[in-house]
Image (cartoon, rainbow, N blue to C red; front, side):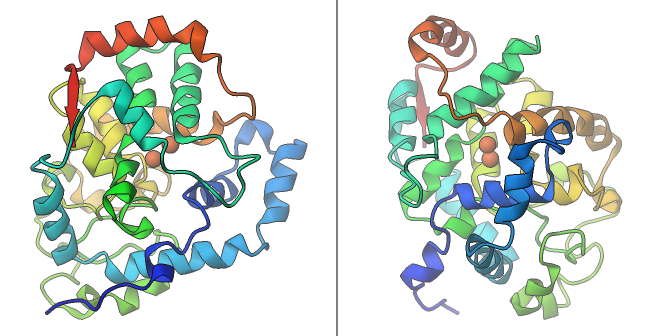
Length: 294
Ligand SMILES: [Fe+2]
Ligand SMILES: [Fe+2]
C-alpha cells in the first residue's frame, strides 16, 4: 500500500529544526536557569505560534512513524551508499541546513555541535564524550537527503509495540495504522519481555542514523548517548522499563549525563573556531576514519 506524496507542509511543518529543540527546552527547562530571565522568556514563548507548528510536527511524526516505515528507512539508509565525505566537508554539508525562520538568533548546526562538545570538554569528561558532543546531530543531514522533518528530529520511541503515554502528544498515535494493528499494539508487540533496547526498533531519525555511522568507532557508553539522545520517554520519563535489560539500565546514566549538554549548552556567542581547530582535528583523527559514509 503506497502512501500518497506528502505536501510541502507535511514535509516541513516547522519553520526550523530548532523549533523542536526550543520545545524540548520548554518541557525540560534548565534547572540552573529556571529562575533567570532566559527561562522566563522561554515560558513566554510557549503560547506563541511556534507551538502550533510543533504540535503539527508531532501529529505527522506520530501518524507516519510506523513499524513498516522504520524498516523501510533502515533499508534505505543503513547501507551508507549515498555519499562519502571527509569529516570537515560533512560539517559543511550539514550546515546547508539553514534556519530561515530566525537567522539572527539561531546558530548554525555546527555551532550547536561545537557548543555541546566544548561544554563537555570544560567539565573534564573523557575525550570520546567530547566527540559524541561534536557528532551527535550529524544525522540531521537526513533532511538534506529529502527526509521530512518528522523523520529526522523529534522525540524518538519504540515502534512495533504499544506507545507509552509518556511520549509527548500521545493522543496523536491514534491515527497511526499500527495503533489498531494487533501485531504491534500490545505491550510487547513484536518484542519479548526485557529483550534489551538493542533488539528494539526506534522511530526513524537522526539518532539511529548517527549511531549506525559511529558504531565501530566509539565506546559503548558514547554509542548509547548517540542512539538514544532523543528518547525522552526513556531517559527523562522512565517509560519502557519492560523492554530494558540490565545493560540498558547500566547505560542509562550515560545517556542522562549527555542530555543536559545537548539541551543547555546553547549560548549566543559562537565558540572561537580558530583556537579550537587543532584540538578537534586531533580528536577526530584519534577515533574516526578519514572519510564518513552516508
Ligand atoms: Fe539531536
Ligand atoms: Fe543536539
